[in-house]
Length: 285
Image 1: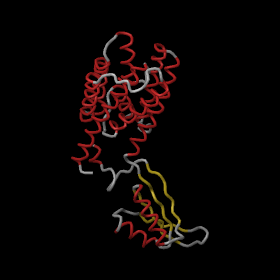
Image 2: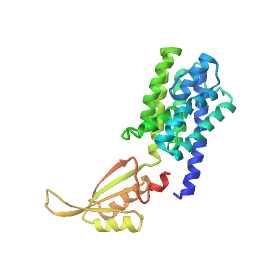
Image 3: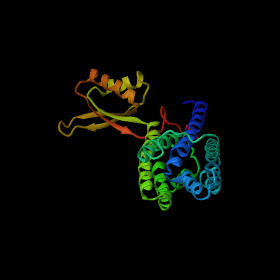
Image 4: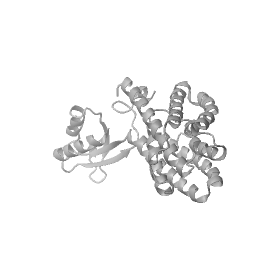
């Protein structure tokens, strides 16, 4: 993707994602008094205890995290996070509390709220940004725990906030909040991984050269040949390996059958691919 188009897409996602997060916070979670964690959850508790508006407490809690985030993640990352946080505060300020769901239907609120929040946070995360609060805290923690996904780190931090909410709103609502966090995590991870989803294909065929030429010339994809040996026949063979999109895999599968109906190939899911034709380093900025 062209860098300018990528930047435009990122900021569009930040705006839409911030809007969805604000709708979930104001019109679903706050009305049902479900503390799903994060600064949103803390703000709901503060509003319940002291009557402070969501947008104000949301803004004030983020200030110390911004300072920490500046040193941990850098100014460019923080710039987008500030924009996202300001947008969330703005939407929380101007939007009414719509009656999207019945106030006492906690299960529906937990599921629909998790979907809205997961979509919003997922769109913000894939734009190399957070919404501030525990999202920013999770991004900072990920610099130390790179093997843990952003969504799971947010889930952990939010669980601590839920324990506080349990003391205020009771066990029942806390349990529904846990359901919502589970839905949020799955939706958020699906959005983040789906944007970079691909398939790896391993092909073993005696017509490997013909298949490789098709991938290179017709599909404009790279392919790697690995020298291998069949342990039963003891014959040498070139094993092909390539990474393709979902759509390209179905095309290649049909062509492989046309070239060699006895070919053996393996198709595996790939979560994220970096390199030519997929995600380049300059597109991550």
